Image (cartoon, rainbow, N blue to C red):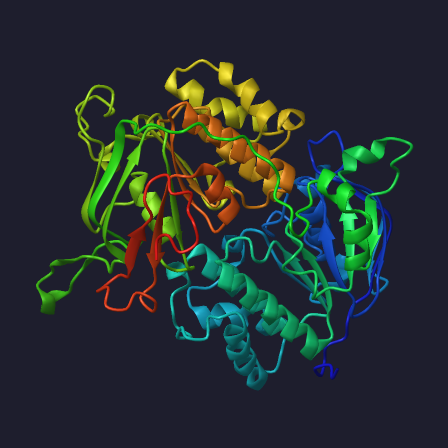
Length: 548
């Protein structure tokens, strides 16, 4: 292997290292002893809340930075506790900034500039890479992650969540760091994109010889790319005298998976070939029509005003999807699938009344109990916030976009208090979604999986008739995935409608219902402007190809 000039693989050493977030009684990581040799490739596993993201942020030298987009809010560093030592090439990570490149769970936090090429070039420019080298690196990185077809001046605001995840990775690859840190880098990608990004990482490592630490819940994608699997256990578990190390398992991938399969399954690790058991849904009856879309065209762009030469008229935004007709009924699931950039999240936000349709309609059919009352009409986009959240609850792709308080319990109480509801459901949600021990924690210090479960819980606390979820299983270990899927199945059986945007085929199969598959312009031959959509029959069980 020939290492790229200027790239020196980094070494990592931890001795009794631990970190406790501000306001948390127990550490996220405790007693970590770990050695990673230069050029080694490590897959970091463990249950949700085991401190995997905390470790990556620490290695990047940004743990506790108020402006880093890391797991802690402003002031976290002053109120946190750090124990032991964590070193990169023999020095603290803060003294080695630039040696490590971090792709975070939420790609929104890493979009810096308004144009695609400038954003990818940003990190390399800050590392003082010679100007003649930067743009070849930018183009190479964009090609590697599957964004090479887009022009360099493409607006970053027009990218989907999955495309932003690719963009964040491209920016890190262009830096060519000695230590590559990836936190759930494929979580929001379509199946083809998962393999594309994994292969891009492999090519980068082959070119540079860099050290890799990647966090993923699903092992199969990365198993053949890494040299070693390290499994962490939650810091709280290390309070006992028996479990006095943060590392539960450590070894070659095939050996760890063969010798400790049952232990890994018990810890919530997604081992190859394992799908956790969930409750079986009762046969759904056709429920009341709660939401209907007809001739719908959607976009995240706003209408713009034309200039003098065009008569100052209003110009409608370009639709990413058009001609959509679908229904949402009580007790039924609607799953929205498709490639990254096909408009899945945009459609979901439009159905939820948070984006104005470009064309067509979204309406709540008139009838007893169907509308919000107060003469607001049947168009959810025109409802006031208080009217909307009691009928349609939305869980965003980025959980942080929903948090409005500084404490988990206050977050859960917020909706019921403003709606005048009782708070009797809060305790049940805390228990079912494994948040009971986190009631006093700041939401921004939670792990990615914990943030996702909290965002679901805050919406459910308002008792909506329709639940709209964008990538609901993101960041979940196998155990919390099963609990979340089972809980949503119970809600469906009780009459709640569930609309979910997901790439998770196992999750779609558990919920059943109808699949609405969106196609991009490239794959929707002859579909006209904005791509096309196709739907599987209700209660089809979503067999492969049912909506093709």
